[in-house]
Image (cartoon, rainbow, N blue to C red; front, side, top):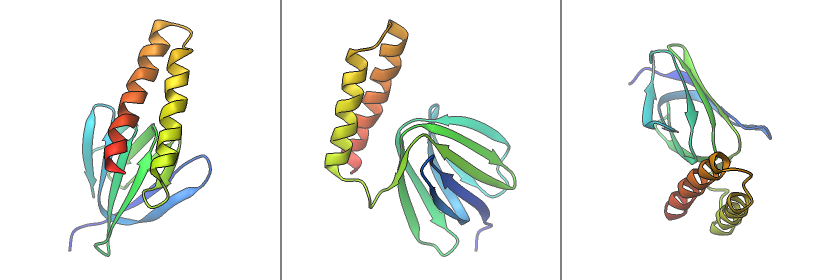
Length: 132
């Protein structure tokens, strides 16, 4: 049996997951990464993507996050998501609604920097559409 560590996924609305995990795959802005017990300390931002949690019981849980931060220490991992849902809760309609909102935001951007950031966010959301 693999070592486990405490993992929490928190959004502004609620605590989505809190349990011992064997591994957590997170969508970091610099690339996908797997967190395991005794991981080196690290903080990273999250891009919209899927978080996969392999719980100590062996079952895998999946969540969609829409940005945020990950705080990883040798003692555990906490994801602070801007917004997150269980993969079972998301529908194509909900994702389409978020894509349209991001598209409208990008069209109404105040400057090029904001437009670039929003277009990147929109691109990440569009890739999620295939996963749902």
